[in-house]
Length: 110
Image (cartoon, rainbow, N blue to C red):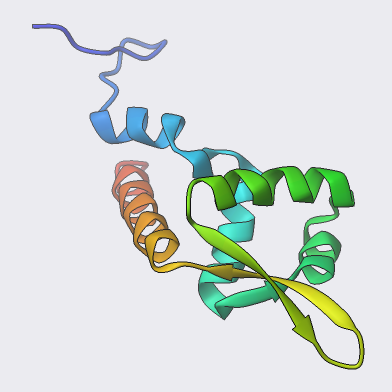
């Protein structure tokens, strides 16, 4: 029987492997998805301010999430045009699944 083992010889569960390969395993993308999951939409400049990322770096992470089908970018017109990032149904489902795996993994920490 083949088991994936950690450095200390502990068995690594399949959920841990899934978490490492998931698009949300990168901290900025996880935070972006968390904020959008809570608020449905968040402005690009607000995300930039909250995450303290450069516009180019934030754009890179958002494009990865967009290619995966997890977010869409919309132009919103207020007193000035704004770019807002909105979570998709696919994004909601994927983030819920990822969060569930993460919760299960964290339950094992004592």
